[in-house]
Length: 168
Image (cartoon, rainbow, N blue to C red; front, side, top):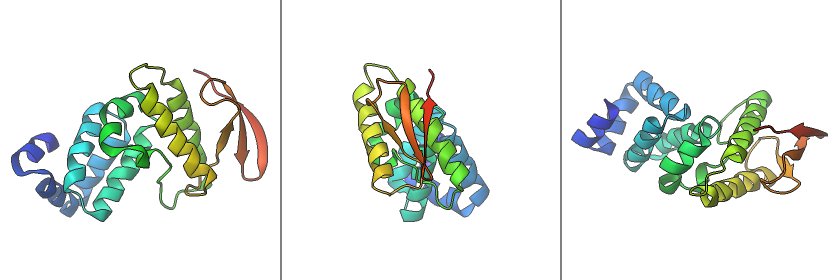
Protein backbone atom coordinates (compact mmCIF):
# COMPACT_ATOMS: atom_id res chain seq x y z
CA UNK A 1 0.00 0.00 0.00
CA UNK A 2 2.78 2.48 0.89
CA UNK A 3 4.73 1.57 -2.23
CA UNK A 4 1.67 2.13 -4.41
CA UNK A 5 1.02 5.48 -2.74
CA UNK A 6 4.62 6.59 -3.38
CA UNK A 7 4.29 5.73 -7.06
CA UNK A 8 0.90 7.44 -7.30
CA UNK A 9 1.47 10.75 -5.46
CA UNK A 10 5.23 10.79 -4.88
CA UNK A 11 7.47 10.39 -1.88
CA UNK A 12 6.93 13.84 -0.39
CA UNK A 13 3.12 13.64 -0.39
CA UNK A 14 3.24 10.09 0.96
CA UNK A 15 5.55 11.10 3.80
CA UNK A 16 3.30 14.05 4.69
CA UNK A 17 0.21 11.82 4.75
CA UNK A 18 1.92 9.19 6.91
CA UNK A 19 3.42 11.82 9.23
CA UNK A 20 -0.01 13.37 9.87
CA UNK A 21 -1.28 9.93 10.86
CA UNK A 22 1.40 9.15 13.43
CA UNK A 23 0.23 5.56 13.96
CA UNK A 24 0.73 4.85 10.26
CA UNK A 25 4.17 6.50 10.33
CA UNK A 26 5.07 4.32 13.32
CA UNK A 27 3.98 1.22 11.40
CA UNK A 28 6.29 2.22 8.55
CA UNK A 29 9.21 2.80 10.93
CA UNK A 30 8.57 -0.55 12.67
CA UNK A 31 8.51 -2.28 9.29
CA UNK A 32 11.79 -0.67 8.26
CA UNK A 33 13.35 -1.54 11.64
CA UNK A 34 12.42 -5.20 11.11
CA UNK A 35 14.94 -5.45 8.28
CA UNK A 36 12.36 -6.75 5.82
CA UNK A 37 13.74 -6.00 2.36
CA UNK A 38 10.44 -4.67 1.07
CA UNK A 39 10.30 -2.17 3.95
CA UNK A 40 13.94 -1.23 3.34
CA UNK A 41 13.04 -0.42 -0.28
CA UNK A 42 10.18 1.74 1.01
CA UNK A 43 12.64 3.61 3.26
CA UNK A 44 14.94 4.35 0.33
CA UNK A 45 11.98 5.71 -1.66
CA UNK A 46 10.57 7.77 1.22
CA UNK A 47 13.87 9.41 2.12
CA UNK A 48 13.70 11.75 -0.86
CA UNK A 49 10.37 13.14 0.35
CA UNK A 50 11.27 13.45 4.03
CA UNK A 51 12.22 16.60 5.93
CA UNK A 52 14.70 16.69 8.83
CA UNK A 53 12.56 15.05 11.52
CA UNK A 54 11.15 12.46 9.18
CA UNK A 55 14.61 11.71 7.77
CA UNK A 56 15.93 11.20 11.27
CA UNK A 57 13.16 8.71 12.04
CA UNK A 58 13.88 6.79 8.84
CA UNK A 59 17.63 6.78 9.55
CA UNK A 60 17.07 5.41 13.06
CA UNK A 61 14.77 2.70 11.69
CA UNK A 62 17.27 1.71 8.99
CA UNK A 63 20.06 1.68 11.56
CA UNK A 64 18.03 -0.73 13.68
CA UNK A 65 17.35 -2.94 10.66
CA UNK A 66 21.02 -3.89 10.35
CA UNK A 67 20.88 -6.11 13.44
CA UNK A 68 17.95 -8.04 11.96
CA UNK A 69 19.04 -8.30 8.34
CA UNK A 70 22.51 -6.92 7.68
CA UNK A 71 22.76 -8.66 4.33
CA UNK A 72 19.41 -7.27 3.17
CA UNK A 73 20.37 -3.80 4.38
CA UNK A 74 23.62 -3.95 2.42
CA UNK A 75 21.87 -5.15 -0.76
CA UNK A 76 18.84 -2.83 -0.62
CA UNK A 77 19.48 0.30 1.44
CA UNK A 78 23.23 0.82 1.77
CA UNK A 79 23.78 2.34 -1.68
CA UNK A 80 20.96 4.83 -1.14
CA UNK A 81 21.53 5.69 2.53
CA UNK A 82 25.27 5.13 2.91
CA UNK A 83 27.45 4.69 5.96
CA UNK A 84 25.71 7.40 8.00
CA UNK A 85 23.17 4.86 9.23
CA UNK A 86 25.88 2.38 10.21
CA UNK A 87 25.84 3.45 13.85
CA UNK A 88 23.58 3.47 16.88
CA UNK A 89 21.28 6.41 16.18
CA UNK A 90 18.87 5.60 19.00
CA UNK A 91 17.78 8.68 20.90
CA UNK A 92 17.32 8.44 24.66
CA UNK A 93 17.92 4.70 24.78
CA UNK A 94 18.84 2.92 27.97
CA UNK A 95 22.33 1.48 28.44
CA UNK A 96 20.78 -1.98 28.00
CA UNK A 97 19.18 -0.97 24.69
CA UNK A 98 22.47 0.42 23.41
CA UNK A 99 24.37 -2.70 24.50
CA UNK A 100 21.79 -4.97 22.88
CA UNK A 101 21.92 -2.94 19.67
CA UNK A 102 25.70 -3.13 19.68
CA UNK A 103 25.95 -6.89 20.17
CA UNK A 104 23.20 -7.74 17.69
CA UNK A 105 24.48 -5.35 15.02
CA UNK A 106 28.06 -6.55 15.31
CA UNK A 107 27.00 -10.20 15.14
CA UNK A 108 24.88 -9.46 12.08
CA UNK A 109 27.66 -7.58 10.27
CA UNK A 110 30.25 -10.23 11.08
CA UNK A 111 27.92 -12.94 9.75
CA UNK A 112 27.74 -11.27 6.31
CA UNK A 113 30.20 -13.16 4.18
CA UNK A 114 28.90 -12.42 0.72
CA UNK A 115 31.47 -11.45 -1.90
CA UNK A 116 29.08 -8.93 -3.49
CA UNK A 117 28.48 -6.99 -0.26
CA UNK A 118 31.83 -7.43 1.49
CA UNK A 119 33.17 -3.99 0.49
CA UNK A 120 29.98 -2.28 1.70
CA UNK A 121 29.98 -4.35 4.89
CA UNK A 122 33.55 -3.27 5.61
CA UNK A 123 32.66 0.40 5.01
CA UNK A 124 29.62 0.06 7.27
CA UNK A 125 31.72 -1.67 9.94
CA UNK A 126 34.37 1.03 9.73
CA UNK A 127 31.82 3.81 10.27
CA UNK A 128 30.13 1.86 13.05
CA UNK A 129 33.43 1.32 14.84
CA UNK A 130 34.47 4.95 14.29
CA UNK A 131 31.18 6.23 15.72
CA UNK A 132 31.85 4.24 18.88
CA UNK A 133 35.45 5.29 19.36
CA UNK A 134 34.73 8.96 18.63
CA UNK A 135 31.92 9.08 21.15
CA UNK A 136 29.16 9.81 18.61
CA UNK A 137 27.29 6.83 19.95
CA UNK A 138 26.44 5.66 23.44
CA UNK A 139 27.03 2.05 22.49
CA UNK A 140 29.55 -0.10 24.29
CA UNK A 141 32.26 -0.43 21.68
CA UNK A 142 33.99 -3.61 20.74
CA UNK A 143 37.61 -3.28 19.74
CA UNK A 144 38.43 -6.10 17.31
CA UNK A 145 41.72 -7.91 17.71
CA UNK A 146 41.63 -8.50 13.95
CA UNK A 147 38.79 -6.86 12.07
CA UNK A 148 36.03 -9.27 10.97
CA UNK A 149 38.29 -12.29 10.71
CA UNK A 150 38.59 -13.25 14.37
CA UNK A 151 35.69 -14.38 16.47
CA UNK A 152 37.27 -13.25 19.72
CA UNK A 153 36.81 -9.60 20.73
CA UNK A 154 37.64 -7.48 23.74
CA UNK A 155 34.64 -5.52 24.91
CA UNK A 156 34.93 -2.13 26.59
CA UNK A 157 31.66 -1.66 28.40
CA UNK A 158 31.15 0.87 31.17
CA UNK A 159 34.80 0.71 32.33
CA UNK A 160 34.99 -3.08 32.49
CA UNK A 161 36.70 -5.49 30.14
CA UNK A 162 35.30 -8.85 29.13
CA UNK A 163 35.91 -11.34 26.38
CA UNK A 164 32.93 -12.07 24.19
CA UNK A 165 32.68 -15.10 21.96
CA UNK A 166 30.76 -14.24 18.80
CA UNK A 167 29.35 -17.28 17.07
CA UNK A 168 28.02 -17.65 13.56
